[in-house]
Amino acid sequence: MKDILLCDLDAFFASVEQRDHPEYRGRPVIVGGNPEARGVVSACSYEARRYGVRSAMPMKKALRLCPQAVVLPVDMPRYKQVSRKVFAVFERFTPEIEQVSIDEAYLAVPGGRGMETAREIRRAVREELDLPLSVGVSANKLLAKMACELAKPDGLKAVWPQDVPEIIWPLPVNKLPGVGPKTEELLKKIGIFTIGHLANRTEREMTTKLGSYGKELYLLANGIDDRPLELIHEVKSIGREITFDRDKTDPQEILAVLAFLSEEVGYRLRSKRLKCQSVTLKIRREDFSTFTRSRTIREATDSDGDIYRVAKELFEQSKIAPPWRLVGVQVSGLLPADFRQLSLLGDAGREKEEKLLRAVDGLRRKYGKGVVHRAVVLKRQTRNVK
Ligand SMILES: [Mg+2]
Image 1 (cartoon, protein in one colour):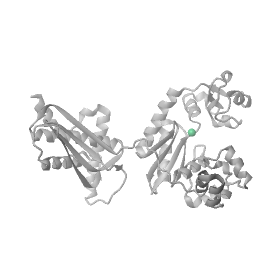
Image 2 (cartoon, rainbow, N blue to C red):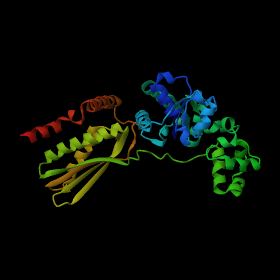
Image 3 (cartoon, rainbow, N blue to C red):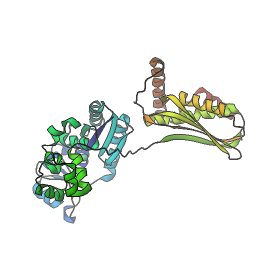
Image 4 (cartoon, rainbow, N blue to C red):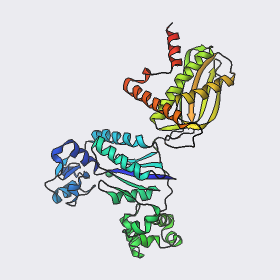
Protein backbone atom coordinates (compact mmCIF):
# COMPACT_ATOMS: atom_id res chain seq x y z
CA MET A 1 0.00 0.00 0.00
CA LYS A 2 1.18 3.45 -0.90
CA ASP A 3 0.63 6.64 1.03
CA ILE A 4 -0.89 9.40 -1.08
CA LEU A 5 0.04 13.05 -0.70
CA LEU A 6 -1.91 15.96 -2.14
CA CYS A 7 0.49 18.89 -2.41
CA ASP A 8 -1.13 22.26 -3.08
CA LEU A 9 0.63 25.61 -3.10
CA ASP A 10 -1.28 28.22 -1.14
CA ALA A 11 -2.66 31.17 -3.15
CA PHE A 12 0.01 30.28 -5.69
CA PHE A 13 0.09 33.30 -8.05
CA ALA A 14 -0.30 35.73 -5.15
CA SER A 15 2.42 33.94 -3.16
CA VAL A 16 4.84 34.20 -6.08
CA GLU A 17 4.14 37.94 -6.31
CA GLN A 18 4.61 38.41 -2.58
CA ARG A 19 7.82 36.41 -2.68
CA ASP A 20 9.29 38.45 -5.53
CA HIS A 21 8.05 41.82 -4.24
CA PRO A 22 8.67 41.96 -0.50
CA GLU A 23 6.74 45.24 -0.35
CA TYR A 24 3.55 43.23 -1.04
CA ARG A 25 4.08 40.89 1.91
CA GLY A 26 1.46 41.15 4.60
CA ARG A 27 -0.80 43.10 2.22
CA PRO A 28 -3.92 41.89 0.41
CA VAL A 29 -2.81 40.89 -3.10
CA ILE A 30 -5.24 40.09 -5.90
CA VAL A 31 -4.00 38.60 -9.16
CA GLY A 32 -6.52 38.68 -11.96
CA GLY A 33 -7.96 40.19 -15.12
CA ASN A 34 -8.84 43.79 -15.85
CA PRO A 35 -11.80 44.91 -13.68
CA GLU A 36 -13.04 47.13 -16.52
CA ALA A 37 -13.11 44.17 -18.92
CA ARG A 38 -15.09 41.88 -16.61
CA GLY A 39 -11.91 40.21 -15.38
CA VAL A 40 -12.07 37.65 -12.58
CA VAL A 41 -9.82 36.88 -9.63
CA SER A 42 -7.25 34.21 -10.52
CA ALA A 43 -5.64 34.15 -7.10
CA CYS A 44 -5.75 36.16 -3.90
CA SER A 45 -3.49 36.22 -0.88
CA TYR A 46 -4.80 35.13 2.50
CA GLU A 47 -4.79 38.79 3.54
CA ALA A 48 -7.29 39.48 0.73
CA ARG A 49 -9.39 36.45 1.67
CA ARG A 50 -10.00 38.04 5.05
CA TYR A 51 -12.09 40.64 3.21
CA GLY A 52 -14.16 37.97 1.52
CA VAL A 53 -12.24 37.96 -1.76
CA ARG A 54 -12.27 34.56 -3.48
CA SER A 55 -10.90 32.98 -6.66
CA ALA A 56 -13.19 33.27 -9.73
CA MET A 57 -14.99 36.28 -8.23
CA PRO A 58 -15.44 39.25 -10.61
CA MET A 59 -12.59 41.72 -10.08
CA LYS A 60 -15.08 44.54 -9.65
CA LYS A 61 -16.70 42.83 -6.72
CA ALA A 62 -13.30 41.91 -5.23
CA LEU A 63 -12.21 45.55 -5.33
CA ARG A 64 -15.43 46.66 -3.70
CA LEU A 65 -14.73 44.25 -0.85
CA CYS A 66 -11.06 45.20 -0.58
CA PRO A 67 -10.33 48.57 -2.25
CA GLN A 68 -6.84 48.82 -0.76
CA ALA A 69 -5.66 45.56 -2.38
CA VAL A 70 -2.55 45.39 -4.52
CA VAL A 71 -3.94 44.39 -7.93
CA LEU A 72 -1.66 42.60 -10.38
CA PRO A 73 -2.11 41.10 -13.84
CA VAL A 74 -1.63 37.35 -14.38
CA ASP A 75 1.99 36.63 -15.35
CA MET A 76 1.50 33.06 -16.53
CA PRO A 77 4.97 32.47 -18.05
CA ARG A 78 6.57 33.28 -14.72
CA TYR A 79 4.16 31.16 -12.69
CA LYS A 80 4.82 28.26 -15.05
CA GLN A 81 8.53 28.66 -14.54
CA VAL A 82 8.10 28.59 -10.75
CA SER A 83 5.73 25.63 -11.05
CA ARG A 84 8.38 23.63 -12.91
CA LYS A 85 10.79 24.24 -10.05
CA VAL A 86 8.22 23.04 -7.53
CA PHE A 87 7.58 19.87 -9.55
CA ALA A 88 11.33 19.30 -9.78
CA VAL A 89 11.34 19.22 -5.97
CA PHE A 90 8.46 16.70 -5.98
CA GLU A 91 10.40 14.51 -8.40
CA ARG A 92 13.29 14.22 -6.01
CA PHE A 93 10.97 12.36 -3.65
CA THR A 94 9.01 10.07 -5.99
CA PRO A 95 8.51 9.35 -9.69
CA GLU A 96 4.81 8.67 -9.06
CA ILE A 97 3.24 12.08 -9.59
CA GLU A 98 -0.14 13.09 -10.96
CA GLN A 99 -0.28 16.74 -11.93
CA VAL A 100 -3.71 18.17 -11.12
CA SER A 101 -2.95 21.77 -12.07
CA ILE A 102 -0.13 24.28 -12.21
CA ASP A 103 0.10 24.30 -8.41
CA GLU A 104 -1.34 20.97 -7.29
CA ALA A 105 -0.22 17.34 -7.50
CA TYR A 106 -0.84 13.93 -6.04
CA LEU A 107 2.28 11.99 -5.05
CA ALA A 108 2.49 8.31 -4.14
CA VAL A 109 5.19 7.24 -1.69
CA PRO A 110 5.89 3.93 0.08
CA GLY A 111 3.31 3.12 2.77
CA GLY A 112 4.21 4.52 6.18
CA ARG A 113 6.45 7.22 4.72
CA GLY A 114 3.73 9.78 3.94
CA MET A 115 4.06 12.18 6.86
CA GLU A 116 7.83 12.14 6.90
CA THR A 117 8.01 12.75 3.13
CA ALA A 118 5.39 15.50 3.35
CA ARG A 119 7.42 17.29 6.03
CA GLU A 120 10.57 17.08 3.91
CA ILE A 121 8.81 18.35 0.78
CA ARG A 122 7.27 21.27 2.64
CA ARG A 123 10.65 22.17 4.09
CA ALA A 124 12.38 21.93 0.68
CA VAL A 125 9.75 24.09 -1.06
CA ARG A 126 9.93 26.65 1.72
CA GLU A 127 13.73 26.74 1.94
CA GLU A 128 14.59 26.52 -1.76
CA LEU A 129 11.65 28.37 -3.34
CA ASP A 130 10.31 30.39 -0.41
CA LEU A 131 6.71 29.33 -1.08
CA PRO A 132 4.00 28.02 1.26
CA LEU A 133 2.82 24.50 0.41
CA SER A 134 0.01 22.63 2.13
CA VAL A 135 0.03 18.84 2.11
CA GLY A 136 -2.69 16.33 2.91
CA VAL A 137 -1.67 12.74 3.59
CA SER A 138 -3.76 9.59 3.45
CA ALA A 139 -4.24 6.21 1.83
CA ASN A 140 -6.23 7.50 -1.14
CA LYS A 141 -6.71 10.60 -3.30
CA LEU A 142 -10.03 11.66 -1.81
CA LEU A 143 -8.84 11.69 1.80
CA ALA A 144 -5.50 13.28 0.87
CA LYS A 145 -7.42 16.08 -0.85
CA MET A 146 -9.73 16.57 2.11
CA ALA A 147 -6.82 16.46 4.54
CA CYS A 148 -5.11 19.18 2.49
CA GLU A 149 -8.20 21.39 2.64
CA LEU A 150 -8.12 21.02 6.41
CA ALA A 151 -4.37 21.71 6.50
CA LYS A 152 -4.52 25.07 4.70
CA PRO A 153 -2.95 27.53 4.83
CA ASP A 154 0.68 26.41 4.97
CA GLY A 155 -0.11 23.26 6.88
CA LEU A 156 0.23 19.50 6.99
CA LYS A 157 -2.47 17.05 8.00
CA ALA A 158 -3.16 13.34 7.73
CA VAL A 159 -6.65 11.89 7.54
CA TRP A 160 -6.53 8.09 7.56
CA PRO A 161 -9.55 5.92 6.72
CA GLN A 162 -10.12 5.19 10.42
CA ASP A 163 -10.33 8.97 11.09
CA VAL A 164 -13.24 9.41 8.68
CA PRO A 165 -16.11 9.24 11.24
CA GLU A 166 -14.41 11.70 13.56
CA ILE A 167 -12.93 14.20 11.08
CA ILE A 168 -14.89 13.91 7.84
CA TRP A 169 -18.45 13.05 8.86
CA PRO A 170 -19.18 16.27 10.81
CA LEU A 171 -18.31 18.40 7.73
CA PRO A 172 -21.11 19.93 5.65
CA VAL A 173 -21.92 17.76 2.66
CA ASN A 174 -20.71 20.38 0.15
CA LYS A 175 -17.15 19.77 1.42
CA LEU A 176 -17.23 16.42 -0.33
CA PRO A 177 -15.49 16.73 -3.70
CA GLY A 178 -18.08 16.42 -6.46
CA VAL A 179 -20.93 17.95 -4.49
CA GLY A 180 -21.79 21.23 -6.18
CA PRO A 181 -24.62 23.64 -5.27
CA LYS A 182 -27.23 21.66 -7.23
CA THR A 183 -26.40 18.32 -5.63
CA GLU A 184 -26.21 20.02 -2.26
CA GLU A 185 -29.80 21.26 -2.67
CA LEU A 186 -30.94 17.83 -3.76
CA LEU A 187 -29.26 16.16 -0.79
CA LYS A 188 -30.66 18.67 1.67
CA LYS A 189 -34.16 17.88 0.43
CA ILE A 190 -33.70 14.28 1.54
CA GLY A 191 -32.30 15.32 4.91
CA ILE A 192 -28.57 15.05 4.14
CA PHE A 193 -26.69 18.04 5.52
CA THR A 194 -23.39 16.53 6.60
CA ILE A 195 -21.06 13.99 5.01
CA GLY A 196 -21.94 11.71 7.91
CA HIS A 197 -25.63 11.85 7.02
CA LEU A 198 -24.73 10.66 3.53
CA ALA A 199 -22.37 7.96 4.76
CA ASN A 200 -25.00 6.52 7.02
CA ARG A 201 -27.60 5.99 4.32
CA THR A 202 -27.33 2.77 2.33
CA GLU A 203 -25.57 2.37 -0.96
CA ARG A 204 -28.82 1.09 -2.43
CA GLU A 205 -30.81 4.12 -1.32
CA MET A 206 -28.27 6.54 -2.78
CA THR A 207 -28.14 4.57 -6.02
CA THR A 208 -31.94 4.59 -6.29
CA LYS A 209 -32.11 8.34 -5.69
CA LEU A 210 -29.11 9.57 -7.68
CA GLY A 211 -28.02 6.69 -9.91
CA SER A 212 -24.37 5.77 -10.26
CA TYR A 213 -23.42 9.26 -9.11
CA GLY A 214 -25.26 8.56 -5.85
CA LYS A 215 -23.32 5.36 -5.35
CA GLU A 216 -20.07 7.21 -5.97
CA LEU A 217 -20.95 9.88 -3.42
CA TYR A 218 -21.90 7.22 -0.91
CA LEU A 219 -18.51 5.55 -1.28
CA LEU A 220 -16.65 8.86 -1.07
CA ALA A 221 -18.60 9.82 2.06
CA ASN A 222 -17.28 6.61 3.59
CA GLY A 223 -13.72 7.50 2.65
CA ILE A 224 -13.57 4.83 -0.05
CA ASP A 225 -11.74 5.84 -3.21
CA ASP A 226 -9.73 3.50 -5.41
CA ARG A 227 -8.92 5.90 -8.25
CA PRO A 228 -5.30 5.40 -9.29
CA LEU A 229 -2.90 8.26 -9.88
CA GLU A 230 -2.67 9.36 -13.49
CA LEU A 231 1.07 9.61 -13.63
CA ILE A 232 2.92 12.29 -15.55
CA HIS A 233 5.78 9.91 -16.19
CA GLU A 234 4.16 6.66 -17.15
CA VAL A 235 7.55 5.20 -17.89
CA LYS A 236 7.32 1.55 -18.79
CA SER A 237 10.81 1.20 -20.16
CA ILE A 238 13.92 3.22 -20.81
CA GLY A 239 16.18 2.43 -23.71
CA ARG A 240 18.97 3.70 -25.88
CA GLU A 241 20.27 2.32 -29.15
CA ILE A 242 22.91 3.20 -31.67
CA THR A 243 22.96 2.59 -35.40
CA PHE A 244 26.51 2.42 -36.69
CA ASP A 245 27.78 4.43 -39.63
CA ARG A 246 29.57 1.32 -40.74
CA ASP A 247 28.55 -2.22 -39.73
CA LYS A 248 30.66 -3.72 -36.93
CA THR A 249 32.30 -7.12 -36.79
CA ASP A 250 34.47 -6.81 -33.65
CA PRO A 251 32.66 -8.13 -30.53
CA GLN A 252 34.96 -6.01 -28.33
CA GLU A 253 33.62 -2.94 -29.99
CA ILE A 254 30.04 -4.05 -29.36
CA LEU A 255 30.88 -4.55 -25.68
CA ALA A 256 32.27 -1.04 -25.50
CA VAL A 257 29.10 0.34 -27.05
CA LEU A 258 26.99 -1.72 -24.64
CA ALA A 259 28.94 -0.23 -21.74
CA PHE A 260 28.25 3.25 -23.08
CA LEU A 261 24.53 2.54 -23.60
CA SER A 262 24.26 0.97 -20.14
CA GLU A 263 25.65 4.16 -18.65
CA GLU A 264 23.17 6.28 -20.54
CA VAL A 265 20.27 4.09 -19.47
CA GLY A 266 21.50 3.91 -15.87
CA TYR A 267 21.82 7.67 -15.75
CA ARG A 268 18.27 8.14 -17.00
CA LEU A 269 16.96 5.59 -14.50
CA ARG A 270 18.64 7.36 -11.61
CA SER A 271 17.53 10.79 -12.72
CA LYS A 272 13.94 9.50 -12.69
CA ARG A 273 14.59 7.81 -9.31
CA LEU A 274 13.73 4.40 -10.73
CA LYS A 275 15.23 0.94 -10.67
CA CYS A 276 14.75 -1.79 -13.25
CA GLN A 277 14.03 -5.48 -12.93
CA SER A 278 14.95 -6.60 -16.41
CA VAL A 279 17.36 -5.79 -19.18
CA THR A 280 16.79 -6.27 -22.91
CA LEU A 281 19.47 -6.38 -25.55
CA LYS A 282 18.58 -5.50 -29.12
CA ILE A 283 20.74 -6.34 -32.11
CA ARG A 284 20.16 -5.69 -35.78
CA ARG A 285 22.24 -7.39 -38.42
CA GLU A 286 23.28 -5.79 -41.69
CA ASP A 287 20.37 -7.55 -43.46
CA PHE A 288 17.99 -5.76 -41.02
CA SER A 289 17.03 -8.95 -39.18
CA THR A 290 16.47 -7.83 -35.60
CA PHE A 291 16.87 -9.87 -32.41
CA THR A 292 15.99 -9.11 -28.81
CA ARG A 293 17.10 -10.99 -25.73
CA SER A 294 15.83 -10.24 -22.23
CA ARG A 295 16.73 -11.25 -18.74
CA THR A 296 15.11 -10.56 -15.40
CA ILE A 297 17.53 -9.68 -12.66
CA ARG A 298 17.33 -10.92 -9.14
CA GLU A 299 17.45 -7.55 -7.46
CA ALA A 300 16.10 -4.30 -8.93
CA THR A 301 18.97 -2.04 -9.89
CA ASP A 302 19.85 1.36 -11.24
CA SER A 303 23.56 0.63 -11.57
CA ASP A 304 25.37 1.03 -14.90
CA GLY A 305 27.55 -1.94 -14.01
CA ASP A 306 24.63 -4.30 -13.30
CA ILE A 307 22.91 -3.31 -16.53
CA TYR A 308 26.12 -3.72 -18.50
CA ARG A 309 26.86 -7.16 -17.01
CA VAL A 310 23.44 -8.46 -18.07
CA ALA A 311 23.65 -6.86 -21.53
CA LYS A 312 27.12 -8.36 -21.99
CA GLU A 313 25.96 -11.84 -20.99
CA LEU A 314 22.97 -11.58 -23.31
CA PHE A 315 25.23 -10.52 -26.14
CA GLU A 316 27.78 -13.28 -25.54
CA GLN A 317 25.07 -15.94 -25.30
CA SER A 318 23.08 -14.69 -28.26
CA LYS A 319 25.58 -15.99 -30.83
CA ILE A 320 24.11 -13.67 -33.42
CA ALA A 321 26.54 -13.54 -36.31
CA PRO A 322 28.14 -10.29 -37.46
CA PRO A 323 28.13 -7.88 -39.16
CA TRP A 324 26.02 -5.85 -36.78
CA ARG A 325 24.24 -2.70 -37.76
CA LEU A 326 22.56 -1.59 -34.52
CA VAL A 327 22.70 -2.40 -30.83
CA GLY A 328 20.42 -1.22 -28.07
CA VAL A 329 19.97 -1.61 -24.32
CA GLN A 330 16.54 -1.30 -22.75
CA VAL A 331 15.43 -1.71 -19.15
CA SER A 332 11.91 -2.42 -17.93
CA GLY A 333 9.99 -3.59 -14.88
CA LEU A 334 10.56 -0.17 -13.38
CA LEU A 335 10.13 0.50 -9.69
CA PRO A 336 10.61 3.59 -7.54
CA ALA A 337 14.27 3.70 -6.47
CA ASP A 338 13.42 3.68 -2.78
CA PHE A 339 11.54 0.42 -3.16
CA ARG A 340 13.57 -1.87 -0.88
CA GLN A 341 13.85 -5.48 -1.82
CA LEU A 342 15.48 -7.97 0.48
CA SER A 343 19.11 -7.75 -0.39
CA LEU A 344 20.93 -11.01 -0.90
CA LEU A 345 24.23 -9.24 -1.33
CA GLY A 346 26.20 -7.49 1.33
CA ASP A 347 24.81 -4.00 1.75
CA ALA A 348 28.21 -2.40 2.26
CA GLY A 349 29.46 -3.01 -1.27
CA ARG A 350 26.17 -1.92 -2.77
CA GLU A 351 26.13 1.28 -0.76
CA LYS A 352 29.62 2.04 -1.95
CA GLU A 353 28.61 1.63 -5.57
CA GLU A 354 25.44 3.72 -5.12
CA LYS A 355 27.55 6.47 -3.57
CA LEU A 356 29.95 6.39 -6.49
CA LEU A 357 27.12 6.57 -9.03
CA ARG A 358 25.58 9.55 -7.28
CA ALA A 359 28.91 11.33 -7.43
CA VAL A 360 29.28 10.48 -11.12
CA ASP A 361 25.76 11.75 -11.86
CA GLY A 362 26.61 14.99 -10.05
CA LEU A 363 29.65 15.46 -12.28
CA ARG A 364 27.61 14.76 -15.38
CA ARG A 365 25.02 17.32 -14.45
CA LYS A 366 27.75 19.84 -13.72
CA TYR A 367 30.02 19.31 -16.70
CA GLY A 368 27.77 17.68 -19.28
CA LYS A 369 27.15 14.09 -20.14
CA GLY A 370 30.44 13.33 -21.82
CA VAL A 371 32.69 13.83 -18.86
CA VAL A 372 32.71 10.47 -17.10
CA HIS A 373 32.69 7.06 -18.67
CA ARG A 374 33.82 3.67 -17.68
CA ALA A 375 37.25 2.65 -18.82
CA VAL A 376 35.93 0.33 -21.51
CA VAL A 377 34.18 3.21 -23.24
CA LEU A 378 37.27 5.38 -23.08
CA LYS A 379 39.22 2.59 -24.71
CA ARG A 380 36.79 2.51 -27.60
CA GLN A 381 37.03 6.23 -28.12
CA THR A 382 40.80 6.14 -28.07
CA ARG A 383 40.75 3.43 -30.64
CA ASN A 384 38.45 5.46 -32.86
CA VAL A 385 40.89 8.32 -32.76
CA LYS A 386 43.64 6.18 -34.25
MG1 LIG B 1 -3.31 26.01 -4.74
